[in-house]
Image 1 (cartoon, rainbow, N blue to C red):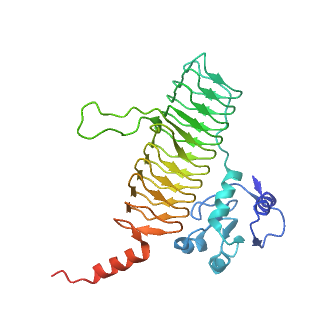
Image 2: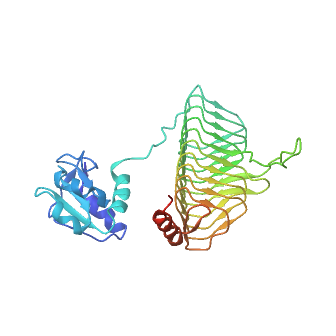
Image 3: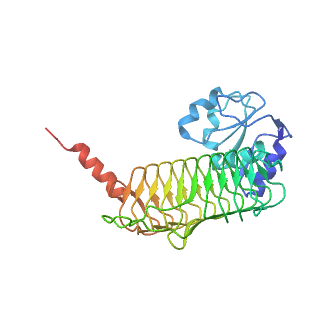
Length: 328
């Protein structure tokens, strides 16, 4: 059970302005969608597409914008906020716990005697920890994951099953989902020549509080570091090539490919299936629409779309012109 007073305390600590009709402390059993909520649950509406579901919810209380008040059932309490989705994301940490290490190392895991294992580390069945790896406290290494020589894993990081991590430094509070490969050799060679593959001698640096989805590949740098900045979020099936540098707070959706030696600034958002060419610079606070093809540098604060990617206003105008053309 989570009390309304706890919810209030978190909102206040995050400087989130709110108003509510709840006059006494009540408890919530769970945090659920509008459709699934029961009379003991807290729910939310974060998207205008779902406002018609508010009227039929059975939730004890709903988090929503004040402008949607008229949709509320008579029995439903409310918490009005400016950004319901932000509040929902914060409250998930109150209602649902992250995985926590149980401090056990499976008898069926292999831990090299030259590795360093700090306190309260969980290493599951079939995991392999190679020589001189350092696993910091409260880390979870899941089934069949391989941690290569000299890898450093920061505190409270969770690495899910079937991952392979080599030539890498991972920060604190990271989460790496299943079947992701970090620190493999990049795609570097001289076209047309036999035995022209470039030997990679760099590494990958994943900074603190980074989440990386399933089946991603982040290649080690040729000589220096491939870097993923602090607080970044990377979806499933993303390819990040050698020497790429990604600034802080990046959001990269599924099936994005970033070619080698490209530099992304801070707060960049990339939509699904976008492709970014190598050796270019993407500025700070840039938004790249889904399925875009970026072939040249993009200045700060730009929003682009299409192939080749252009200013999104121009792209929308071009789409409008094409839609009005008479083909036959």
